[in-house]
Amino acid sequence: MARIAPGVIPIKDQNPYETIRAVAYQDEDIEENDIVVVSGYTGDVLVVAKADATKVEHRESALFLARTGAAAGRALWIQPWRVTTRLSTEETPTHTPVFLGKDGKHVFEIPSNGTMWYKRRVGTVIDKNVIHFHLG
Image 1 (cartoon, rainbow, N blue to C red):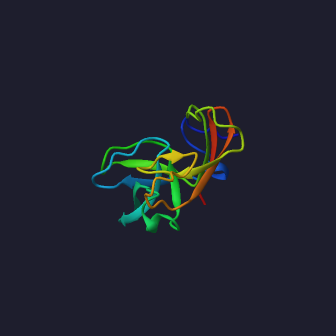
Image 2 (cartoon, rainbow, N blue to C red; image 1 turned 90 degrees about the horizontal axis):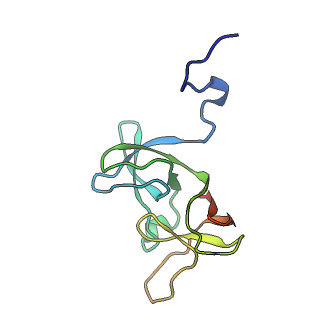
Image 3 (spheres, rainbow, N blue to C red; image 1 turned 90 degrees about the vertical axis):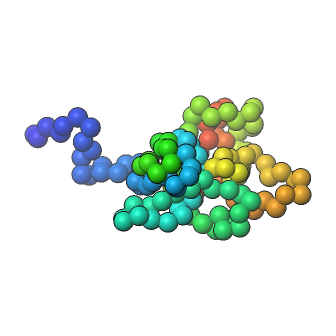
């Protein structure tokens, strides 16, 4: 049986987390677990920016979750779904919907302060401090 070098993913499981390599938009630092939207490409790599519920173009765009963070112009990994832990659910009950917020963040309810927000569900609280993001 052949040995697999440490850090190498076998071909049959080449991308088990459906990760996609991307680059952070030129003037944005992206943190792990930020919700991002594709804003362009460079060569054959996607360029992503923080998604924002106040922008109509993000209402129907493909959204992704940053698996890793990156400084502006640097590479990161994104994915279309993920179960995250260590995120504060603010004592939000299980099965509560999660929505796209501003600046790449998530919210548990859309504000009703007169600001134009576009409702986009991005996940569900599945346990205390655990969210299943399903962005597809």
